[in-house]
Structure formats: C-alpha cells, structure tokens
Length: 103
Image (cartoon, rainbow, N blue to C red):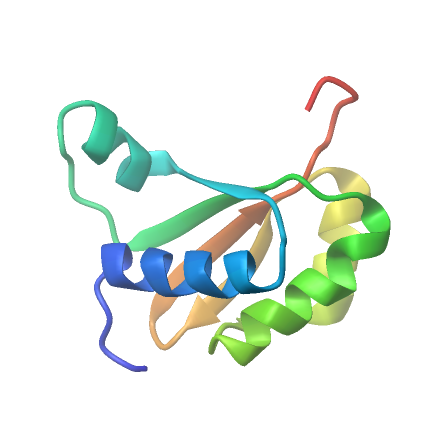
C-alpha cells in the first residue's frame, strides 16, 4: 500500500482499527475538511480511546496496516502524554492517546 493519499490511508487505518475493536477518531485536517472548510494536509491524525495496556495491541494493528513505529519511542511518548509518531511510506501518521483524565 504505497502512494496513498491521506484520506485513503486514514480509511485503511480506520478499517484495521475497526476490525480489532479499537476505539478511535480521525482528527486534524482530515476531520476539519469533512466538517468544515477543506484544507491541504499530508499526514493522518488519529485519537485513540485506549488505556495504557492496549497500546501494544494498537501498535500491532498499525504495523500490520503498514505503519512503521519505533516501539520504544511510542511507549515513551505515551507515558509522557506526547504524540506517537509513525510513518507509512513518506506519510506521517500521528496517534494521540488519553493524556488527561477527561480524555
């Protein structure tokens, strides 16, 4: 799956997350383009509604969908409440996990 546009990649990743029962929401410019005025983007942003224990399962799903993730960096980012960064070909894929109790 190389050469995907952001919308196609987001759809591909959403299908993989759905298949494994992982709750999520597409966010960022892709969501804004659906609900507001479209704007250009070349990345995919996904909010995950998971707890700390589901991170490895979610990373497995991402990797099986073609997203390269540094697991050590991903766990460090999740612990710090930072974005988890992965790459699908040349496209950045950001995952956001709950960082505050309200989330």
